[in-house]
Image (cartoon, rainbow, N blue to C red; front, side):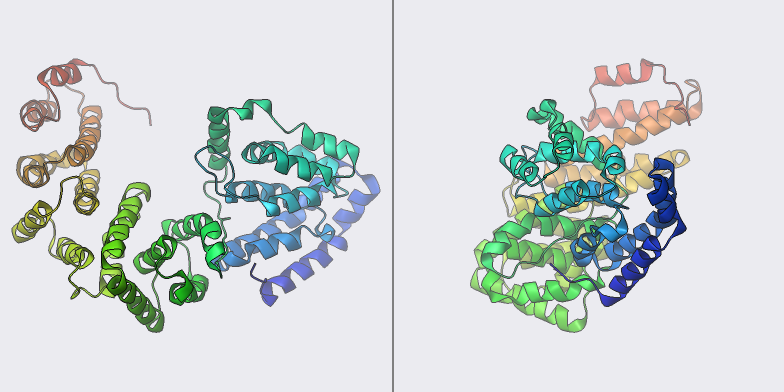
Length: 464
């Protein structure tokens, strides 16, 4: 765990003094009424939230330490219900929607809430968080937590949060998804960097998720450069798939000072030299995973950033791949000489290989971005893509998955056109209909029957 900066500690100490000396707390202690506690909340929770977001954005590795401070009774349980939601969602879950490892911080927070003098008020705001959290935990873990709660009435409350419907995977998955949506715009993820090979395997899933969340937003990541650099040069980790994946994330998505970039360059190319074939195979698995699951996170800028770190004089597949990808990003995928290089490169490898799939996904990103950017009135530009550019790549790749990705984006645009041009006798509508009936049928995006069905259906304009 990373210690909290002195600046944050000072702010929290001052806030704690302010809470304890406040007329709002005095009024609540005198009346013990919920309305007075809500007044205390409205006076101080915004300040706690402000400190929390400052730490979450600028010093996220210190979040656990911050949360432990906020569990102190001097804060009167303020912000703990919100914190509980964050902690429940921070733990990584497996395909069975169970935590990958026990969540001791979750336990600490439950015990802090259970022992709070203000528990009767806090319990009204934590039910769903506890239910979802318990659904993700093992029965043994929950039993151990409940045994730590001395107050029988409080223990009974938590026992009642074990919802029987969550024994079913589908219910757990649905509950988790709905709960996550409530916090989708909040920043609360944190992680630990491993110091041993044993910790590397245990900490890796949450560390990876955390790092990708930082670049997906994007967020300021200066505080992560030093621990990432120290992680990269730790020779105990070299050669492991976990180290290579974190090293790639660092190289792809983080702007680094020169010394850290040099260390990353030396480390990557040293491991490549020692384990050439294994390193290349892993590389394309990592890149493919980022392409498929990263919501477009693997951008041209990211590719170029990693490419600049790699030694492309080495005669391996990674160097060959990034030599072509550099040309795609710099000269453009519409360039005929680039298209020919792509054709030659693609033909060297099995069509279903990961290296070729990465190449196809790189090109498809450009198609998808272009199609999405075209305004409805500029549909002639859209037509040009499928009469000139797309057929070239359809022939180069000869890959159904590539075709279907572009097809899906293409019909999303056609939907937009049909929602815009509603007059079936109008010139625009007829142009669109003629194009789909000719070009999309030829490209096998649609059958004659599907074409007829699409254009005989009366479409209503979407509500704004």
